[in-house]
Every structure is written in C-alpha cells, then in structure tokens.
Image (tube, rainbow, N blue to C red; front, top):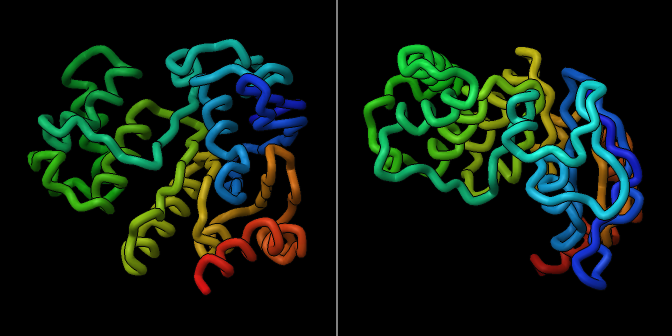
Length: 240
C-alpha cells in the first residue's frame, strides 16, 4: 500500500532524514520510534504532504504522491492525527467530526450521518451535542480519530495518540487502534510508549539521526542494542 524510497530532507544545512526506505502492506500496523529529533515528525509531514522531500519518493497504492498537497492525499485515503489535539472549540463534538466528513461528501445530511457513525465507532456516540472544549484529553483524542475516520481513509497516521493518557485510557486507546486495524485500516504509529508499540505493532522502524537504525518485529527492534543505546537508554537515564 505504501512505498517510501530513499527519502531525504534537509532544512538549510541540517540533514533531518537520509535514505529512508520502507514498504507497508495493507492491514498492518507500523510503529515508528526514535529519540527526540530522530526525524519522526518530519517523516510524517512528508508522508502527508505538509512538506516535500529534497530527494526520494512516496507512493500510495501505486500512485506517486510525492508532490501532492495534503488535501489531495486525503482524498486518496491518507489521514493523520496530531500530537497536540486542537479541536474547533466553539463547535460541538458532532460538528467537529462533520468537518472531516465534508472532505468526502458535500451534503450536510450525509456528513452528519457519517460523523455520527464514526463517533459511535470511537465510543463517543453519547457526546455528540457536547462542546468540544468540554472533553477530556482522552476523548479529544478519540474525537480527532473520528474526524479522520470521517474522511474515509485507508491509511491512518497517528502521532503520539497515547501521550498524556493514564493507564486505563491507554488500554482503551490500544483496543480502539486494534479494532480499527481489524476493520481493515492500515496504521502508522509514532509513539514513545513502548508498551503500546509492543502490543500493537506488527513491525517497527527505529529512526536515529534521520537514519533507519533498526527494523523488524517489536521484540527484535526493542531488543536491538543500538535502539537501547540510542533511545531506550536515553529515557532510562532521564528517569534516574
């Protein structure tokens, strides 16, 4: 479904990504990990069209999307969440999700039905009339996922969906992501919580300094001494 070939990105003289290549089959969950500054967000921005690479290409379902704008990629079936959730605070939960639905359909009635269905899917069906600003962090994240789902994606990129959640909320989010995959969605997760990566990902890519440091199953990557040194060790040191 997704093919990334030799992607490179520079900001001035700073090389942020170099020679990043991978393929992702439909119906899989890919975990993307690495220390701060590893290039994860830059790669997400390239995959979704917010920035263009200096070299390399991105293909989605056989179509070269390297030069396509975010809205055109969204119409092809790519959607993303953001690490910092920014709802339309003056709108209701339903209206927030309808914004996403209008990307795929033009009639208000159809958009509302889609939005209600997606809110049911993420467990917010009883809160459609609530103000978006009244939601907890966990529910704002769910609402953002519903808004993405309303665009009818086939590939969903999730940027630190577990960040800020307590253990109960995290387990509920893990169950939701797993259900989306089981429903046919392909998912890429940027995540710092390794327990979530271990539970969800079919495969993991670890970035460090803009390079692919390790790739394999969660057990293989999380057990790679290079990953432990570059990423896990850094976090352990910070906790001491």
